[in-house]
Length: 268
Image (cartoon, rainbow, N blue to C red):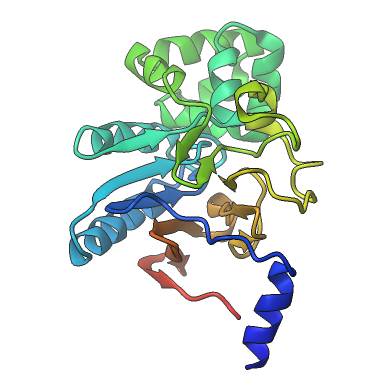
């Protein structure tokens, strides 16, 4: 009873209809992977098993961006995402780390920034020799990276989307600028914003599902749902499952080197 009362007051006096996805559809939104191929593989298996165990539906997977950087195998994550996309409907959003990665091939200043924020791991995952990397100037690293990263990978990353609308949900990497129509959102905000988006409490016109900002647990604020649980450092990769008006979570967890995946139960 007490929990029900809290929920009523949390919604306010003017109760809004529950957000939903269209009938017959099921959505799996996956948070920032950041080079953790091991967690990504486990979560793929969990999603496939979950989808197979549920009633038949038109299923879409949405990867929320930041596939690369920080973790040990960005190249493997990119290859696996492309392979999965050939097997089922997988839509992928561009994150700020994909933006930096692609810009680094042309801009040395961006490359310096990229390398400080996880790009080193990305470059090495493509087979660049670690000793050669340590001895190289930033211009030489740029040349190594250009030689090592296949054109097909760069083209794949460049084709990622900026926003995806399904039913009452809008999927973006970082968030949106509050009070700006969806069609007028700036790409920079979609990939980089934190404030004032994170603290904005009013409705956006759709529930925004995003990554980019790390939290220990998925954060459902009513007007937005953040699912970046810091896979590269926490060892937890989270997926939000949407069907009808229901919301639930799956997660892959690295516990002492062993990877497991299961439904995630959040505290009330």
